[in-house]
Length: 101
Image 1: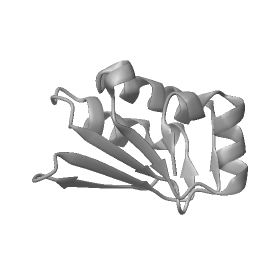
Image 2: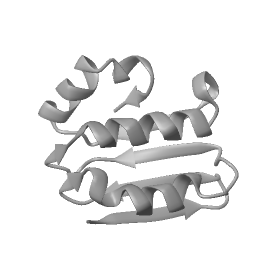
Image 3: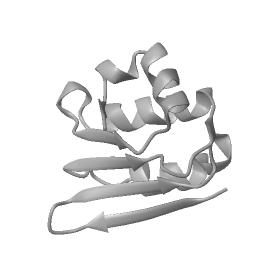
């Protein structure tokens, strides 16, 4: 269970860097960092550079973040995803809901 959170106060950008697994084991940390009673940041970066696997709860967490951040107005970038994770995100239609880099 590993989640590193950085907040750039000047840009109001919250960056989340995950360890090997983006799954239910990081749900509590994810919720506290992104949703737990705080106002939405202006933008978010989800760094999947170290992630080997993600499950359906990870997709659900991303959807909760999108809703919290303003839905269609949300600025959320998913970066450094491996080709297999990019494939999973595209199959789920997340390439239409988030910016994939």
